[in-house]
Every structure is written in C-alpha cells, then in structure tokens.
Image (cartoon, rainbow, N blue to C red; front, top):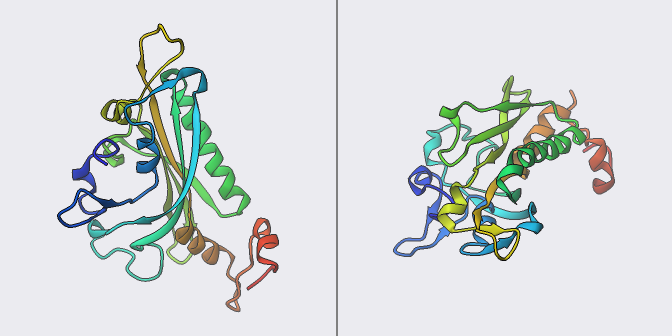
Length: 218
C-alpha cells in the first residue's frame, strides 16, 4: 500500500484493520500497480494495459457531511479501473488514450459531461497530471466528478521497484504508471436517473443499455 500511495493522504479515506498491516482497498489501482513489485518487465511488452472491477471501500471522513443523502457518496461501491505500465516516452500518449476511452464510454451513455484539467493544488501528490470527467447533475444544477485519470510518471514504480529493459544487456529503467476510473456504478446511476428522468417519474434507459435491460423505460 505504501508503494502505491502516500498513506497520510489517505488517512481519512481508507479503512485499516486494527492492529494489522491490512487495508480495505479504496480502488483496484493499488492491487494492479503492486502486481509487478520488484520485477523487471520486458520493455517490448509495454505499454501493458489492464482493467479491473472490484468493490471499493472509503471512509469519506474528510467529506465533512457532504452528499450524505442518496448514493452519490457511499462507503462501499463497485468500480471499473484502468491501469497502464508504459515506457517514459509513451506515458503522455497513454494518458490521452485513457481519458479518451473513458469519455467515449460516457458519450455512449449520452450523459452530458465535460473533461477538466486539474490544477496542481487539486491533484494528488503522486500525480504529474490529472484529468477529471464531470457529469451534469440536473438536480444539483452542477457538474460533479465521476472519473479521475492520472499520470504518475515513475513515482509508484520507484517506490515499488518496477523496472523494464528492452534487451538483456541494457540497463533497466523505471516504468511509468497511469490510472483512470472507467465507471463507478453508483455515481453513474445517479447521473442516468437525473438526466433521463421524465416528468411523470419514469426513467428512460440510455439506448446503449436497452438490450441489457430488456426495456426502454423503467
């Protein structure tokens, strides 16, 4: 865990098992980046792109009473996370690719959204550049963040000793790591309800989901 994050930054967020060095993950990013801890990767296999779905657990103690009603901010939720190990020269291109994949997902859901480039003061300390994707919440008359997409450069790989080489006689280099939410189910469900609800209280199902739901309206 300490290799993936700065624990002080997550003190108000993650659950720790008392008297044990065990935590409930706040995101599957932490599990994915740790897969190759202490390993030397084949540079010819990079970039390596992964996705994981997992339950996520967050205390949300730092929220100070925000969003207490409803399911926008909860202590346990499901999330699909994207993760990439890349060569240093490719990481900025991979970052744009990740946010592009995520935006395409929300475009297919037909949810009004925008992509925001965060200032350094709003980013996590381990990130070199972060995009947020925000969706329109009609009931709040505001855009709210549902996705965070970050390039961490070699911060995590140095702490976890994740390196690569292209040839066996070449010196190793530290890989770059990138992460991005694809979708957190509860927040996206809220966005669908708020943007597709009809005057009589029904909810139109986005076109792309109708074949899975077997209906057009609920």
